[in-house]
Length: 372
Ligand code: SF4
Image 1 (spheres, helix red, strand yellow):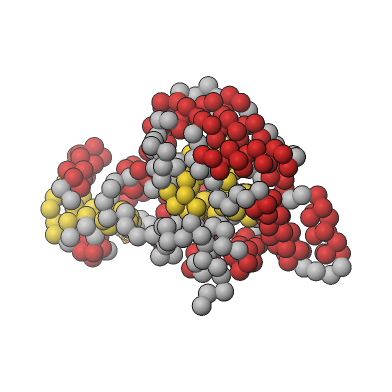
Image 2 (image 1 turned 90 degrees about the vertical axis):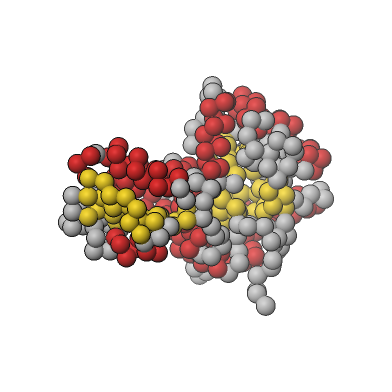
């Protein structure tokens, strides 16, 4: 038997517009990202299209910062234009949470400890409970309550390892916040404890999952730029996911929401937490290439990963490995001297001259892809 508790299921969305989604229980691990810009003044219709595009890429939940009343108004309007469950990320001002809950957002992220009096927490919990809106408690190592920072410093001074002291403080902070909601009879909560270190992220989530069945939103915070952030996230999340910890994931990158979603997809897929979708197998390219693999992947990655298909696509630079990979792929494209060959299940179905240009190659590939 696992030493970790199976998370209970918390539902969000399902109000007639927004898709209903389970987090925890037997629900698939969901993918989320966060919008990277202020939304005040944005064209809401075009925002909705971009959010829907993230959904086609595999994203299940999108979170928005709500620092002021105007943002709450825009997010509420956006909630009525997309099936994507949207999350309002709120600090300090509980009236923003109340406005977003009334406006139809699917979930709020707020920490009871930073919105002031117990009465304000009660107001938010009651409004969320009435509307079936879950609350995510998000604890970060960089913003722990002062007393827990002091306690960690005291533990370190008395010889405890800094890592253990910080992990204990993160878990205690999350436990306190969850208890504040529990005292009010509110149980639809999700917890996240994030550190920028892989080990601390893993250790605090393991410690929490040993004690509580609250679903966990997992991720490494401030993970860094694309490559470093993906590596750190992959190490932390794959460990937790293979232990059965983590009901929803975010890969935090100093990069686009699309990159976060694609990275999360790959991590879930390779951890066995999610199956299906489009898998791209592409070679790194070398001096033998007769076809610009990098350019092709850059042009096609988003479109391919947005397809509602369960297929493998092979993109290879030359005939050394191209036809071999093509045999295992539903569709493959490879350079072959001055030609580009397109395979379907290992059979050559098309040959284009490289000199015909990128457009002709892309058109030929699209025609063959559409036949799948
Ligand atoms: S498939 Fe060809 S071009 Fe690509 S890395 Fe292998 S040898 Fe190089």
